[in-house]
Image 1 (tube, rainbow, N blue to C red):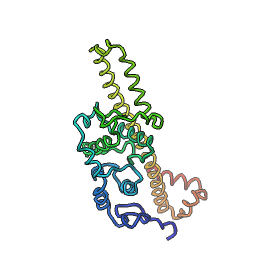
Image 2 (image 1 turned 180 degrees about the horizontal axis):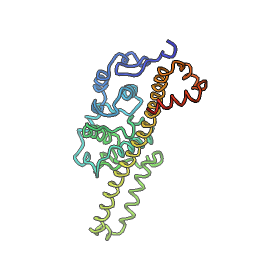
Image 3 (image 1 turned 45 degrees about the horizontal axis):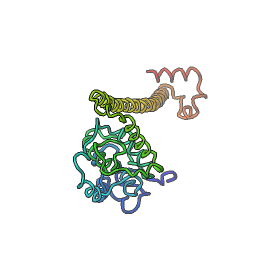
Image 4 (image 1 turned 120 degrees about the vertical axis):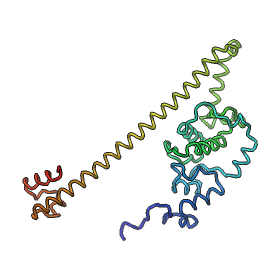
Length: 272
């Protein structure tokens, strides 16, 4: 049929997919990929067929399961301990920026597509991947780095420049021995750091609420248009029963061929 050459994307695959995936349902596709790559839990929000195909085709960032396990064997508790309040949105945003700076594919999830009922499991996936990506702790989400960042990356990576710039600023700030020994100063600095992280978390929460609100407003407008159309059609059908002179072609022509009295009758029926 003309216009129906493309099949819709669904759990059974797509006509444009490669032979090795097109006949697999989502669960089978997930199982096939999870044998080799580390994936979020199957029920995670955002983990759809499109994402799985992108992992399969190396179009998003992916981690080999075997490599991840070898990497984690040597990690200490300090290397895996997180600093401050964990926030999925902030971490995903920073990881994607780091990946872009390295000319690598991004994670592949929408910015606000964090899961609900499996949030703790997703955080396990997200933070394990974050530790693997950010071994030198450029993003400062962990207590200690796994290895030190090579200073040669300053010229090629903007995030490295920020990191080393912060290190240099810290050394300058504490150039006086008295500053390092002042406990009250340290307490105030820690308070600034923790409150700033809390501020970022709440700001991201506000951004998420605005995002959801914009989506809800657009959806409401869309449903309202559909509702108006249904009411108009129903009112017209009722009016046609009431007055056999009203025919379907009048609706197609926009009602211009109808008299004012008939149009008023249709409007009244719509309001009813």
